Picture 1 (tube, helix red, strand yellow):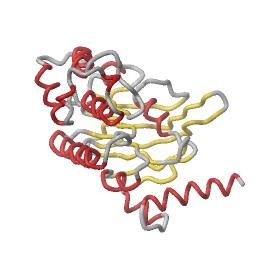
Picture 2 (cartoon, one colour):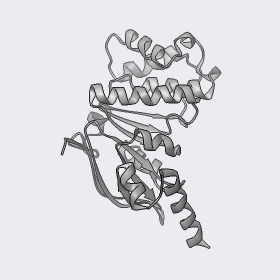
Picture 3 (cartoon, one colour):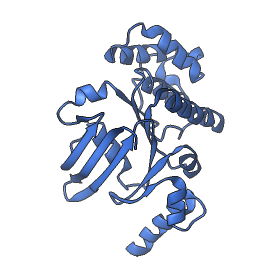
Picture 4 (cartoon, helix red, strand yellow):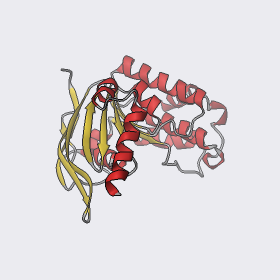
Length: 247
């Protein structure tokens, strides 16, 4: 067993009487790519917000890099980063200005070279002086991914990171993320509705439904446990079973 960099114990989050996350426990090892999978409303985004300390748990414990999230969130956040296709960066700044601001917030020295290399890596260096508001959705996603790698994070939270990307850039992004993991032992937590992508990139998957973990294991283990041929068929079985139960 490798070094555990995330430990979640009996985590619960209530919004009024609604249960978003229901007494879940799991751990993530250093250098692992862990996928969160589940239908809309399963609790994936809430879970990521809890792990980032953006919202407070109703009950339970979160330890990241061996540190209690509640006791020392700032020390943890200096070593992690986040990207989402659904969270935009300040639109009145240029790409270069946006990344410069975040680099200074993270205390990155001599950040100009790092910014330049990341913009080149994501093939948007030619846009560095463009206002962020003028970017396409795919270009904004690439900017967000560049921001997420600024501080060479030990843990990377990615919420639908390829949702707005064309197939070529999406494939390059997955290849890049696996390369970063292999070289730097970066731990990556990943959400996507692209089942093929999840099956390709994830070492393990935590499958959520109605705030509970209903399956956890490698993609092949989950596929075999549900007696299906791929993750998409597993997803459809769970989603349609849920509809049948409601009816």
